[in-house]
Picture 1 (tube, one colour):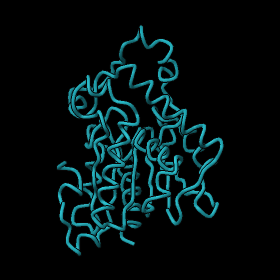
Picture 2 (picture 1 turned 180 degrees about the horizontal axis):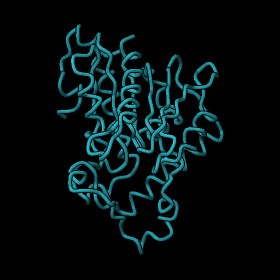
Picture 3 (picture 1 turned 120 degrees about the vertical axis):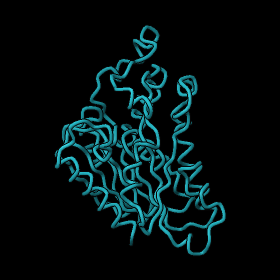
Length: 268
């Protein structure tokens, strides 16, 4: 709750309600830490960031193992609906990796048709086509596999699950499959919602083909193409550089570029 705008300001003033709120959704196995750098970068900004913890994440291995992708998504929906009910009228969304995939599913399933339309939606390295081959065969070898151990440091273990139950890999595969099929059929953004997708050219986790499929299968409400920017990067979720050993000046420039573009739209 400490990371949610709705919990920090349960009785917003008129001045509070004038502020633009952006809900930030992290990726599979991650936590609110994934958006901490944008929060720190945005200090003293005119907008506020609500960092959602996806359902089933950030607690125990058993909680994570038992949660469905619908459970992951429910946290985003709850914060969105709570903010709208409090009277906020300027709400945007940003999703990294599977957080973006969940937002795609919400758009595809017409979630926003009967609700306040988001002002902006941003994606950072959305995953629709994985680069990691194991994800595509988890359903076959799952009972033998039990879990996947992620090769990461103890510092990473504080913010990402070290072990990934095969059940959760199957949930991610199901989510990606639903979104891919939707993109093949084509769908559009809510009326007057702006979207921009940023993707690392050499993303080791979310194949950049993901963004190609999004560009081909998703339009704005007028039928025009969405904005896409391919970043010269080999980092998955290139906006998250903490704990990333050997981050280069180009990596930091990419992060600054994405944060600046999002902030400009949030100040409108």
